[in-house]
Image 1 (cartoon, rainbow, N blue to C red):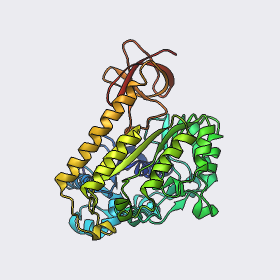
Image 2 (tube, helix red, strand yellow; image 1 turned 30 degrees about the vertical axis):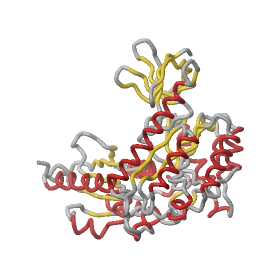
Image 3 (spheres, rainbow, N blue to C red; image 1 turned 90 degrees about the vertical axis):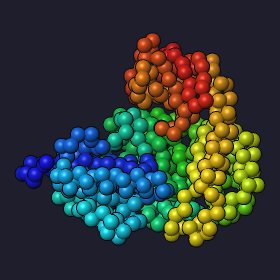
Image 4 (cartoon, rainbow, N blue to C red; image 1 turned 180 degrees about the vertical axis):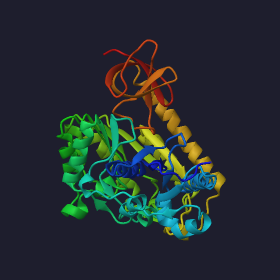
Amino acid sequence: MKTKTLKKDKVNIITLGCSKNIVDSEVLYGQLKASDIEVTHEATGDDANIVIINTCGFIDNAKEESINTIIRWAEAKQAGIIEKLYVTGCLSQRYMPELQKEIPEVDKYFGTTHLPQLLKTIGADYKHELIGERIITTPSHYAYLKISEGCDRPCSFCAIPIMRGKHISKSFEQIETEVKSLVKQGTKEFLLIAQDSTFYGLDLYGERKLAELLQRISDIPGVEWIRLHYAYPSQFPMDALDVMAERKNICNYIDIPLQHVSDNMLKIMRRGITRQRTEELVQTIREKVPGISIRTTLIAGHPGETEQDFLDLCDFVRRNRFDRLGIFTYSHEEGTYAGTLPDDVPQEIKEERAAIIMEIQQEISTELNKLKVGKVMRVLFDRKEGGFYIGRTEFDSVEVDNEVLVDAKTNFVRIGDFANVLIESAEDFDLYGKVIS
């Protein structure tokens, strides 16, 4: 059992949830290091005496994981393994009074905007001069780039505005400073993220400025890939597509969560778009950026979803043949508009519908992958695992999309480098090939 000593503090940061939380933890990491506090991220050892858990509170599974993690570290504190336990992030922001009551072993809970207070509690000063700087926890060749915080959209199912507040864009200058700093650290790929990336700039500049932001980042020397995530379909800024088409270092890739397609569901979900406009948008994206890979996310079992709504969704997926697709089962969230509606689709039906959609997508993915056999593709290699070097093309994002595997016995590449790969075979969600240069 550990006892309190005069030994210098060491902090272990545990990150749960989405890529936006990763960025927040990386900012925290940088601030602590700047105050000369020893810090690690998700360390497996037990030499840290302070643990900070950055939680997620978005859907039921994420909330359960966050609570279980807090309880596990609360027990570690009671056992004397650690001395201090702090909790921050979305779950803490949303359920602070309940958490304080149910898990009082935590020394203090903080919300999503309480970084200065958290640092002060640990004995660190918030350093304003570090704005735009952070220590990345991902492999050094790629980094998430959060261009804004919060969201102004009224989607029925989403609790993000409750936890993260209104949309606030970072300035051009702040983002450019951050990119230049990361390039110096060896970062080649920048994954643009936000709750709604298409809203970027409206609050600061009076109009949507995503296209100009893409241009500015693209112009920075050392930026090899820019990847756009979480584009909201309603009122999509079409000029961003023109920039994507003309700039070679902007990936032919867009992550655009459509959530549903039937007019009935789009209205209930408060998405501000119709089926016809959704279909037209997908067509326009493909026309303006030939060869683009479109990733989308859907929801199964939202309140009010009828069998016909679901059949319409299946038809939409089959016809549009998305390159990448994920689907969630609806999670009833208090405080949201949908939370006031009857949760009228049984859980087993939600899961069955999600499985059917993924079966359709698996067939599509297999067919699209087979078309790549015999082609040479530029691949960025992320890691070595199980006898393979594993990387991604410009059409695939980190963790959620397809990967390219090359045999480590007969090929050699350096992690973080690009290489040209001849695709020799294809599976449902993976490609296999050999390095040719």
